[in-house]
Amino acid sequence: MLYNIFIDPFVQMVQMPDLLVQTLWEGLVSGVLYALIALGFVLIFKASGVFNFAQGIMVVFSALTLVGFYAKFSSWGFSGHAAAFLALVLAAGVMLVLAVLVERVVLRPLVNQPDIILFMATFGITYVLIGFGEMVFGGDPKQMIADELFLPSGSVDIEMLGGLVSLQKIDIAAAVIASLMIVGLALFFQKTRIGRALRAVADSHKAALSVGISLNQIWVIVWFAAGLVALVTGIMWGARSDVSFALEIVALKALPVLVLGGFTSVPGAIVGGLIIGVGEKLGEFYWGPLLGGGIESWLAYVIALVFLLYRPQGLFGDKIIERI
Image 1 (cartoon, helix red, strand yellow):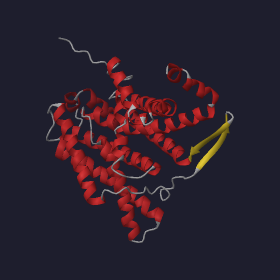
Image 2: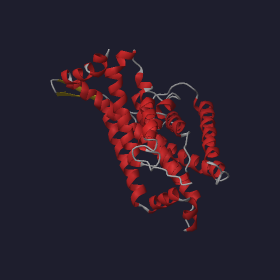
Image 3: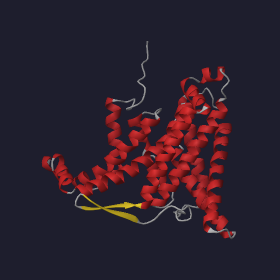
Image 4: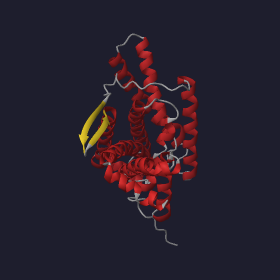
């Protein structure tokens, strides 16, 4: 048993390096998408101190909205690509409307309330979106309009290390698009005036108000940014499988990512996502057979639990020191 756990997996890695590269690639793609989801959590937490439990259902709701608009435009006679991009613009508009509604209906009335109250409010948002989404779109899985959005299909086979590594083109596109969006948002919030305002709000709401920064505008901006992140994530995950409410479970994989990287760190979201993505793929492929398989669904939470025990603030989080 000790040999199977501590030695045999590494022997397999050395003997079949092409399979190791294949596993690492799949973990890298998953990790980048996890990081993208986690970025939505980080943006909202930095601006309002609220852990947005609704981020997972926002991924599903935005993707369903996109597919629903596409179906409507197609029925009106629009061509496939035109209908897809019109649907994409309107889906982004819906996420803007959602951001405004959340700020007006939820955040503004609850300002200065305890964090737990705001956290529970995001539970309410979650179930409102679930109910509204099921009422409008139904509960059946939908097919993502990948071809209509010019997302590639098929695979690229590369001979390396004495074997064949197969890279799905949609995975390559997902990794590139998610990486560009992460970098773009990071630069936007680091280099622009809005980004400086966001950092000021994250440091102190009262200090930000004292220098004329509007909390309401900042909250709308970050919720809209989180909505765009959710939309891109929903497109990429939906293109790899289907669009259904089961995607919410995938989106909640961002929780271990946040534990690893820290709830307020954009670089932490990236690093944590890669650790979780690669770690669960390696664990599933090399150690999963010892436990009957299926460890990919819970290994990320075990890794997060270990971090909570030894470094609860995460790799990049600020250590909180309270003086008595």
